[in-house]
Image (cartoon, rainbow, N blue to C red; front, side):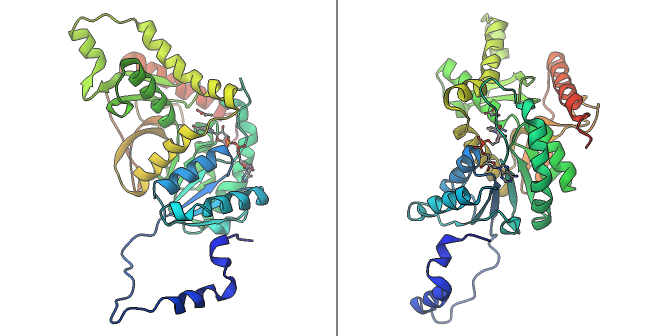
Length: 350
Ligand SMILES: NC(=O)C1=CN([C@@H]2O[C@H](COP(=O)(O)OP(=O)(O)OC[C@H]3O[C@@H](n4cnc5c(N)ncnc54)[C@H](O)[C@@H]3O)[C@@H](O)[C@H]2O)C=CC1
Ligand SMILES: CC(=O)C(=O)O
């Protein structure tokens, strides 16, 4: 059963009422068909799915938003609660169903369903539970929206992106994991906070696994276009490598800390994913560190692995991977991160 609170409130005569309420203007042309109608589906309406949904609505990123979850009552409750904000938001048609036909014709399908970490638990611990769910989620999503982009958020995100790629049969450029877009935002926040500047002026990437083996690319940090480490070196300003390592450790510990404090993370991932949705659907061609098919880049050659690299995103999905200069140490850490993911992946049987 598909739930669509708003249009059904007037009953079956709702459309007739609308037709008699508005008289068409004389000599009017039929509606233009050139404007693209954008539809986003979000699977899983827990903390993360709802933070993403509400950010998509407030940022006016879709004409249509479809929600799916395995719990029909909560799903209908969340749909109605969002619909009741219609008077304060850009116009978006919101529908919800446990049946995947509600997602038909989506441009972007975002998957947030599944188990989340308990305090102290690692993302990798969620693997078996969440892989099992994907077999119910990805095939119907792919069937109803064969041309869509899949954006995986559930954890462990790199491994689940690989499994989603396998289950969907989609080309690898249309299967993306939210990856270290969030870790990089945490990194930029911490650097900005340290230097008392605006995080939007800080360019800095975390790549690799969205997890404990992520890699901080110190050589990529620039503020207002000024590369930070080479600036410090040229000015002969001493800095402790340990200070840098501590900032990276704080990034890795961020999710654990928030989960310890409030039980889950939601707002930052909501903004992170909406930011990715904008780049993809509005063809922004921005560079984001996200989980992509990484084989062949930066010496990663051990197997079909998804992990975060600075990727160029647009309407076609992943348009390419940026060839930035990494130090030998960064390349080595990135390869180790890939090996960690592959070791687990090879036991999955996919
Ligand atoms: N990649 C990232 O940066 C982040 C990933 N996450 C991950 O996102 C996932 C969701 O986290 P929360 O929203 O906090 O969890 P939650 O427990 O609040 O929500 C999960 C939702 O998934 C639904 N669900 C479970 N099985 C389903 C199925 N087969 N089909 C459809 N819906 C199903 C549940 O009913 C529930 O509504 C977790 O795996 C978490 O680790 C969370 C934050 C950041
Ligand atoms: C939970 C999670 O993956 C994060 O907040 O980074």
